Length: 111
Image (cartoon, rainbow, N blue to C red; front, side, top):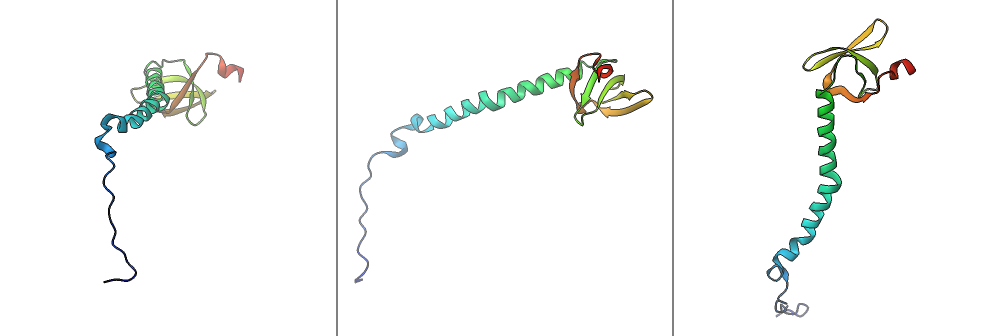
């Protein structure tokens, strides 16, 4: 017999928990996923689709900006690479995927 420790008596179950609200307990998670879908997933996939279409539709003579910030005009196109003319007599070869934006024609002359 212990003088300091009394016997613990468990209280009867209150009847709550998962058994009562099966779908109701998952409702906050479902709502959170819907919010993430519309605020994060959908806009990001839409942006990626637009970027993919822009890269696929590039043509000779288009003026572009690379992800490194280089402004140039496309002089040659390949399946995965392109040659950019960045100044008179200066051309560089970059990957198509490094193109971040298509700028209006005449931008290079104005800058």
